[in-house]
Image (cartoon, rainbow, N blue to C red):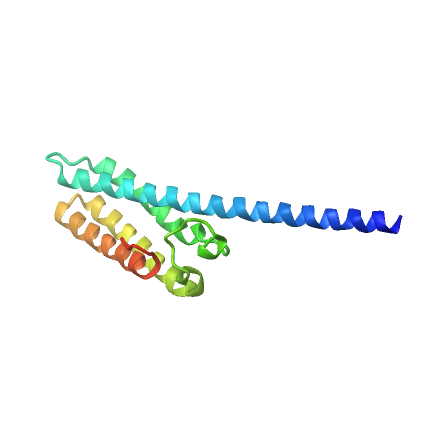
Length: 155
């Protein structure tokens, strides 16, 4: 009876370990997918703003809508990189380990990018295309700074 109980306890332990490993794997996959989707959304919003800024008749309402979405996504960036979702997880990612080991630096760069997106919003509200283009360039520079520091392959 004691051997049977010991065997059952071992099996429960193994099952629990497998379940936790699988849950962590699914969580990591979910985090990687969320950040991929989020960055695609950021790129899409930026492209829409840029198209409108270059259009013969820019649609400032479309720019404002795209910029609002951009701000929402920029604010989420740090949450897309939870502990355990980096290269050590085995997930396919171009994120460098420094995102997790230099969390403060990463969050500072993400915050700068969010501030630049908000600055773009201010420029969009003015309807001044030159100010919009300047704000776009500023935003892209903040994106590049973060990608150069924290991504393999760079932006």
